[in-house]
Image 1 (cartoon, one colour):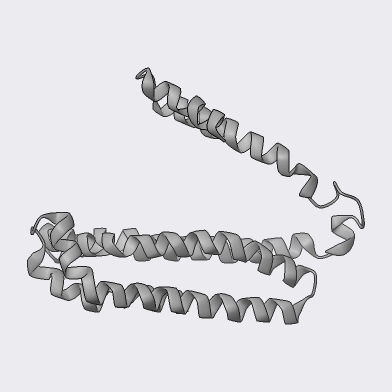
Image 2 (cartoon, helix red, strand yellow):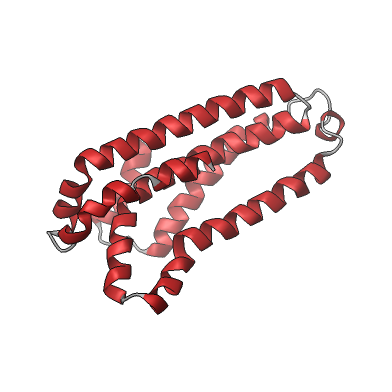
Length: 193
């Protein structure tokens, strides 16, 4: 939509873009999207009521929520907290080198998080609707896709990771770039998990 792009570009042209204005633009965009998709919500378009189709909704929701909370805790522990623990045992320079390598693995993590946000609700719906064969099929496809994506990214890092590190960090971490080949296996392990 050209009009929308021009509207969003106006604050940039006038030098008035701020964090708050960016938030307002995003809020308007999400509100517009939500209003255009409201008819897709269960119960709005007719048919059986949502709770009739999924009688165990709230108990299943709580089971799912527990897994989400546990996963969030583990994710924070594996991606953030161990830097603090490591700093107690190794130098801050070594922690910075580890973080520099991990920053190159961040894009595949973000892609997997986005895919999880798309697939997990669909899996939860299939489970709640007792479509177990569809759930298993979806789970297998998602697993294969995750494995292929992470393995492809790992191979990319093995081939180009050291050069990419040199380019991004201007040679500052060249002495540890050989470790990136080993460190690049992490997304495959996390993807399988």
